[in-house]
Length: 272
Ligand SMILES: NC(=O)c1ccc[n+]([C@@H]2O[C@H](COP(=O)([O-])OP(=O)(O)OC[C@H]3O[C@@H](n4cnc5c(N)ncnc54)[C@H](OP(=O)(O)O)[C@@H]3O)[C@@H](O)[C@H]2O)c1
Image (cartoon, rainbow, N blue to C red; front, side, top):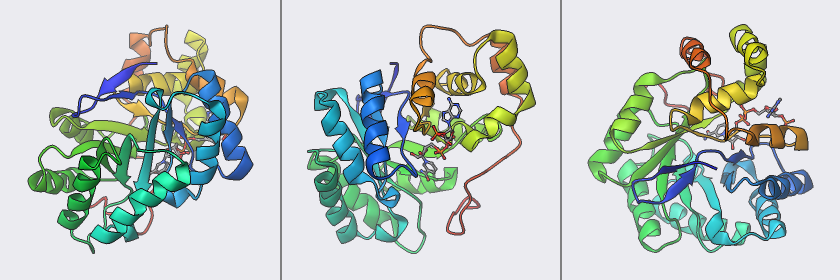
């Protein structure tokens, strides 16, 4: 595993398991299997309705809590002060853990003052219920707002990011301000396998399209959280260390941006 340092000094694993749409026994099995393979980072959210199943997978894997990095997210409708405070406690109960490594605002919500949400999150961090605080689906302007309220509170911004949605300006802003970027849908929800350029590179360098796309991210110090449920995919996505991404592959993937945003729900504030 490789790590990136957060503004708290904590080390965040550059690869994690995404769990959106994993539920019940299937979710528990995938989480346990991932941890058995060597993953040590799990991404969940209240909105995925799988905290208990993730928690059972963690318990079954029987790994020292200190070795794990667990992220969850607060729903955009629950961003009032009291709701956040109650959610943090509930998440820990559901996951059966004592603290989260990272707690994120899942989506910005202009109907609830950011100052109120960040105050609650800051207290949660001070109380030790979450070691780090972050956001998700924030634009540069949202991040600027957050930094004006508390300059160093936001440690991570989790956004959609893959070669066909190469958000360079957002990445630069985050990295210049000590905010780690996490890439969700790093395989473009499977579209990576239909990309002609990446497929040609995969053939030439004898590495799968998914490995090239994930390596492209982690080489930029971007955390990647691919979701996988089959053993085959879990193992394949873990094989990212101990080999180099050829410069030609990096340069060609750097040229693939099409502003191809796949996740764009009605409540998103991407134009802010
Ligand atoms: N913050 C947010 O708003 C937000 C939004 C979206 C996602 N996320 C997070 O990001 C995670 C990942 O994103 P995502 O689930 O949208 O998409 P993704 O990781 O880009 O793609 C997942 C799909 O790729 C398949 N796959 C995985 N590894 C593969 C491999 N080696 N070869 C072939 N197919 C492979 C999976 O199949 P199998 O399941 O069959 O293995 C699944 O169908 C989510 O699970 C969630 O944790 C966050």
